[in-house]
Amino acid sequence: MARRHLFILLIVVLLTFTTACASTNPATNTPATTNAPEVTEVTMRLQWLPQFQFAGYLVAEARGYYRDAGLSVTILPGGPDAVPLPLVATGADTFGSTGADTVLISREQGIEVVALATWFQASPVAFMVHRDSGIRSPQDFVGRRVGMFYGDNVETEYRALLAATGVDPASVNEIPGDYSLAPFLERQADVWPVYATDQPYTARAAGADIELIVARDYGVELMGDVLFTTAEFARNNPNTVRAFVQATLRGWEEALTDPAAAIDIILARSPDFDRGHLEFEATETIKLLRYGIGAQCVGASDRQLWAKEAELLRSLGVLQTSIDPNTVLLTDAVDEYYRARGIECGR
Amino acid sequence: MERHITPHNLIRRIGPALLLGIAILVALEWGLPAAGIPVYLLPPPSRVVAAALQPEVRLAYHTLATANAALIGLAIGAFMAFMLAIAFLFLRPLEDALYPWVLLGQSLPSVALAPLLTIWLGSGLAPRAAMAALFASFPLLIAAISGLRRPAPEQLAMMQAYGASQWQIFRLLRLPAALPFIFSGLRVAGALAVIGALVSELSGAGQGLGYLITTSTYRLATDRAFAAVAAAAGLALALHGCFLWLERIVVYWERDR
Image (cartoon, rainbow over all chains, first blue to last red; front, side, top):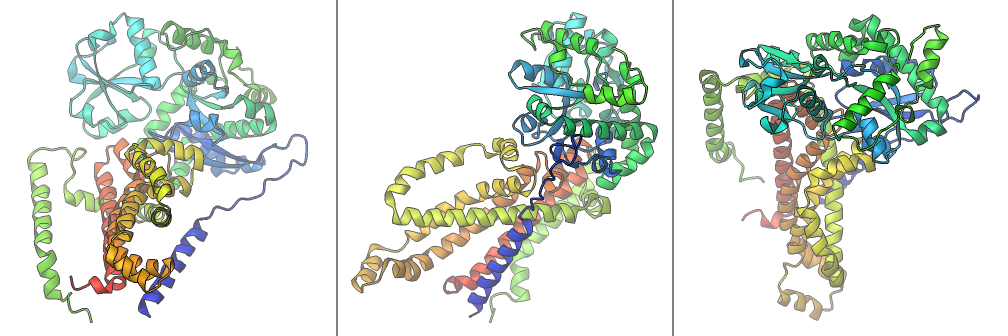
């Protein structure tokens, strides 16, 4: 008898689990007017954790700007193994955040994606060294151990930096790394590529006295995070794209004018994050968003800068052909947003 | 009556392991700072406990998320493994055709599948549960196959001589013989399901112990990462204990061994 009861109990437990976890599928609304979004349920895949790097999306979500625009947006975190490009290209996610270089490279590989907004007008990548290492410029990399993330935009930037400064890559001892700073702090590496917006804070908090070497100072002009989707989705759903981009722009505008409020929103979502860390990230991120054309228009795309990046990638052999940036840029929504506010972005 | 587990017996059984564990923890607590090992490399146990108790870490919340994925995956994996084992038993050609592929599938690095599962199954619970099911099903399949084949030819011949149907042979002979094997398989599969769920959470999950490990490692909060690892171990151990307890009730005839 006892056994039978147990068996029934087991089945009940299992059934409760499965029904509790079955996903609900809300019906999508049909557009009422011509300007209404064609698709209302969309996902946004970040490249990394929901931190200040993505404040525009997070603020837009928390403040209801997506809802106001008729969208139901799910923001999904990225991670070492959750790369937005394949997720968006396959249609598993609607929108994604990635590097400008990825958009150009994927176009050459026949993956038709378009950049809808350029957030980081300058690259967030920096090369971190211990102050007492005596390394002050890329020329000092010779004979030193440099951490490398292969296949990443960090690698692209590193190759560009060496090429710009005439350092022979063979003279540098590259060691594969990952996102933990421990090998650098333990001095198993002399140079560690980082996101200047984020990891210097972690290193300093661990007691390291560090300096940053930035490729921009050596004439390497690369961009960073952009918002992208597939060319096909953008073609078929122009209203959804416009609604999403413009709501995100509203989010960024607020995050830039009131970073503290944006940090509150991020912390409410991820209470395990550190406020001091987010404040550092906000300060550094805003610099990159406000760089160049971003000083006037956050999110705008500088076509000359895109052309320069495409040319640089080609000279490095990352791209095999010349890619016209106009084929990967779809900036109507951003342009319209600023035009409506009487702001001239230029270029 | 449970006359085997008295408090005295229990102490005698787990006492040595407990003592060793405490000794190691004490040694680490004093030894790590004394040896100058930084907290971000190996935190002393007290730091890990403190991290586990910080409300903003939400260890219970993340543990529940992983437990949920692991249990659903285990249930699915167990069901599939058991069905496959029965199919193999009655359809030998099916086994001949499928078994090598099952073996091959097992030798693939399932970790590499994590990003693909997210693409195929979305971002919610489904890819986590699927990974847990993948991890859990193989040991169970092996256990169920060996268990169901356990009865000796004489026993089978005897049942057949008395005119027993295939179903009766299965229910009265093969299944009881297989149960101890299945429970051993479940104990292994439980721990593997936790690992599977955790591995899947390393790629693009917003919750779960795998997520906690990723974020903590990135921020050099090694104490939090260790708290998550300890929680995962606790989860695996709890599952192990559950199956041990269930086995004692279900396979009552093996209890005295």
